[in-house]
Image 1 (cartoon, helix red, strand yellow):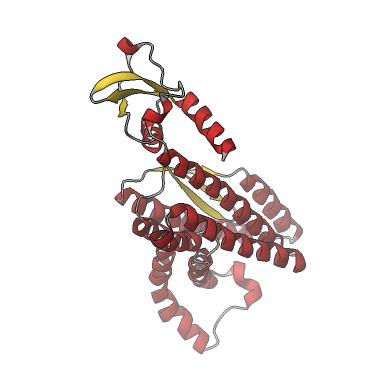
Image 2 (cartoon, rainbow, N blue to C red):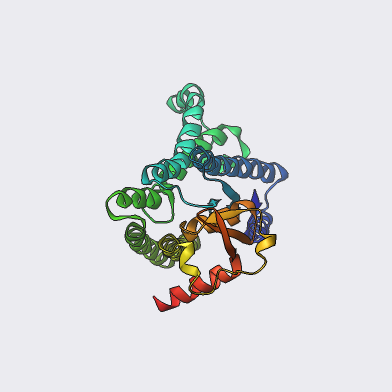
Length: 300
């Protein structure tokens, strides 16, 4: 698990705000505890994605927590659209599950107090534990709903991409999902500027740029799938020297570069022995493979 560097800015801002509002030690501790509970909910959300991905043979590189949420980086996308759909929906379902666990407290403690008008004043929210769990319940539901927005690469956008992939294929589906995500991101930025809400502007910009980054990777992945290892022989990418000292990991010449890249990533290697009909014919180096892909992308 990683913490994004922007947490330093968030901590400094909250400390400044608390001091300027003359927060007591009790109030600081209340918000620290609530912040911890909220980010635990976000972490569990990301673990939901990671565990569902693991079920379909996809490993998680790392989980990064940001002030606006979390991000689980998978080493690859699930092969089937149905599996991608289930991985995407797993995170919001975790937040719904947390909210359900908190419902008994709301039902047996908060609801009777509301009926008898025995609730603390809202301005004392950070002075009373009464609001702690109901607020956590509400924010978990809000997290689930917000993540279901079809703004790629948020969970809702990934669900949309998965559904469109069934008919259109992943590349075309990603392009459509990114277009919708850009529209929602632009609306959030405009709303944030109009209402002077910096958080909306920041989230909209984050969605816009991460959508672009993921679309570029999907295009690259599509290119990797379309090129066989044997196609690199004519281009001089496959090295024929040092045949007697081949790497211990190998790939067949008829496999595509997507599989070669996955093998190298999974085992943290930078070269693979290439075999054709069981006979070693050379070595594929990671750096030269990516130089070739970069040239192919420029041509397209």
